[in-house]
Image (cartoon, rainbow, N blue to C red; front, side, top):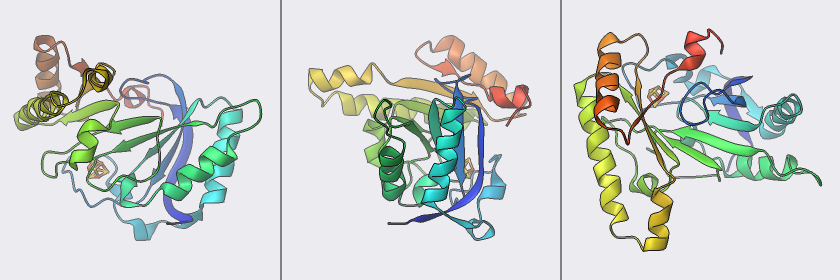
Length: 223
Ligand code: SF4
């Protein structure tokens, strides 16, 4: 387990995407990704060697400062954050941000699901990629599924992976089955891809169990 993590950037902003769009959040972007999506908009984060290893304690100091300024949750993103073992980070966040009149800050993670799970989270955004599907574990353990739509094959992938998830639920008890009602399904057009936009909008119009996610922070020209 690691006590240092390569950090690309940290910032306090609004969550731009998915279920928590528009809410005040503190982001830490960890370096390193070998998933290699052609349309990736954070390619600068791929090479972890380019970034300094930062002690977890220092990251937590920043989280505490942002919380005081109003951040209601932390988003761990990347890169692919689960390329790193995040057990120590999450344990330390839970311990250090818990005060007698305050619960620990909620921890969200955005992952493609290609690695083993580590850490513990209040919200998991699973954003699987069709060229490198997620580990089976994540198909049952996520809060929102977000598929990036770049071309028609991504729509097919969204349909297939949701079907795979539904097939898993058929084997669950009715109590466990209740959990599935809480899961959210999003399609999000790849940025500046007109074909992706029209495919996404048509898909949501015809499949009401899916929701549209937009990168609203990019429209707002904020981080
Ligand atoms: S998984 Fe995320 S960070 Fe990695 S290449 Fe794909 S979009 Fe980029």
